[in-house]
Each structure stands twice: as structure tokens, then as C-alpha cells.
Length: 93
Image 1 (tube, rainbow, N blue to C red):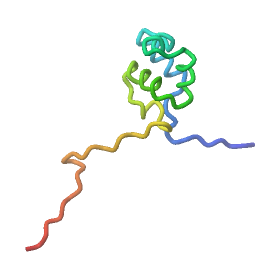
Image 2 (spheres, helix red, strand yellow):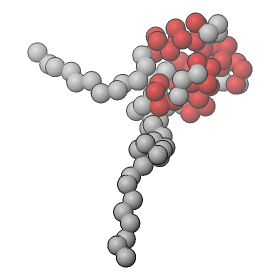
Image 3 (cartoon, one colour):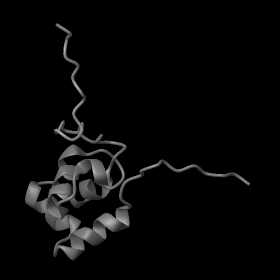
């Protein structure tokens, strides 16, 4: 028996993405037409890195690229806020 390992955060499944697009009232083909791509490009973008198509899908369903396809688009670095800022050390006088 071969055990398969899965990435810790594989991103969204292609069917989940298609469902989210349909739930918002469109199809991948319609999104493709709006941005001047073929429907085949959109299908390809569900599995492979295709920046223009991936961005159009992410914008349409309002989910960041790094959540949909973490293997292709890394999460942006966390912003420093007062809560997570490193403590500064003052020089002794």
C-alpha cells in the first residue's frame, strides 16, 4: 500500500472554485470572455499558474490569490502592527 502525502495547505479544489463562481452568478467562460481569454485558458488556470486568469477568478469570487493557489502565489508578508511589532531595545546611557 502506498501512502500519499498532501501539502499542508493545498488551496481550493477546482470544483470549489467553479461552485463559488456559479454561486456569484457567472461561469468561467463568461469571466474568460470579459478579459479576452478563451474558456480553455480558464480551465487550465484551475490547475496551473496562469496569472491573468487566476487573478480574474480571484477578483470575481473575492478571495486572495494566495488562498486559492498557495503553491503558485505565496501569502504577502504580515504587516507590522503595534500588537506584533518586535520590542525595541534602548541603549543604556
